[in-house]
Amino acid sequence: QLAPKRYKYADLKKITNSFCGKLGQGGYGIVYKGSLQDGRLVAVKFLRNSRGDGEEFVNEVVSIGRTSHVNVVSLIGFCLEGSKRALIYDYMPNGSLEKYIYSENPKTTLGWEKLYEIAIGIARGLEYLHRGCNTRIVHFDIKPHNILLDQEFCPKIADFGLAKLCPPKDSTLSVTGARGTIGFIAPEVFSRNFGVVSTKSDVYSYGMMVLEMVGGRKNVKASVENTSEIYFPHWIYDHLDQVGDLQAIEVTTESEELAKKMILVGLWCTQTMPGSRPSMSRVVDMLGGSISDLQLPPKPHLCSPLHSFRTSSNPTS
Image (cartoon, rainbow, N blue to C red; front, side, top):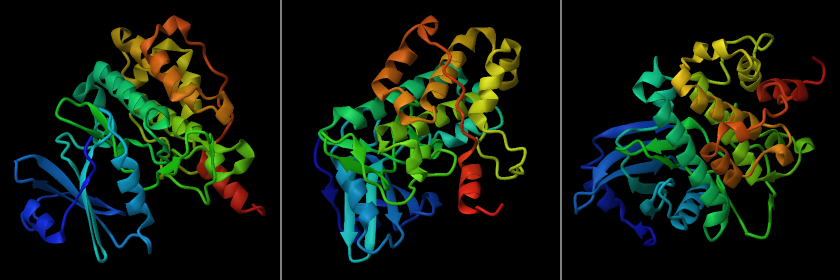
C-alpha cells in the first residue's frame, strides 16, 4: 500500500467543496464528505486542537499508515499545517455499525447472516493488527462506533487515535491511565490487579461489542440505577440455557446457531482475566468452526466497570 499522502489545508478546502457535507461530529472533531480529483469519495476528519503535540494525530497517521487489510480503513492522506490537523479516509457509505445495532430492529435491517459476517470481518481485522502487520497494534477503542461499513457492509476498523504500537517481541504494554470507552474497557486497563495490558485488552472490547450485536442493546444503560444495573455478559449468560429466551433478542431457530456462536465467543472474550481470553486468531477459528466445538466458558465474574470505578474511587461508600 502507498504511504499516506500529505495534503495542504487549501487542498482540503477543494476536496470538501469548502466544507459542506458534514458526515458527523464528536469529541474528536468533525468529518466531512469530499471527493478527490479522480472522483474517489473520501471522508475528511478534522481533529479539534488535539492535545499539545498532537499525539493522537501522529498515532493515527503512523499506525494506520502501516496497515493494509480489507477490514481496516485505509488512510489516503493527512494534513498537518499549524494547528490544523486532518485525516483523509475512503468514504464508507453505510456509516458506522452503531446505527444498525442500536436501531429499532437491527436484525431485520442487517439480518443474522450479515451480523455474523461483520463479526468475523472485525475479528480478522483485529487479528491482522495484533499479528499480521509489521508492528503489533493494540487499538484500545474497539466499539460499534469505530467500525465503519462499506457499500457491501464489509466492516472496517477505524479511529486509531488511542492505538499503541508495540514491538512484535513485547506482548505487554505500558499504558498510563485508562484509555477507551466505558462499557468496553478491559478490566486490566483500569486496574492492573487484573493483569497486564496487551492485545487481550482489545479481545475484551471485541467480545463486548459482539454481545451488543447479538443483544441489540447498549451494555451500559446510563438511565439504569447502578443498584439494579445488570452487567450485560451476565444477562446473556443467564439467558443462554433457556433456549426460548433467546427469542427475547429475536433469535429464530435458523439463526439460533449463529447467535449462539456469537454469544459463546463474546463470553469467552469477556473473561475477566486476560489469560482466559482467546487470541483473535482463535476467535476467527471459533466463529468459523462448528458450534459443537465450543464449550460454555465460566461465567464472567466481574460486575460492570462503572460499578467498580465507583467503588474503587470512593472507599467510604
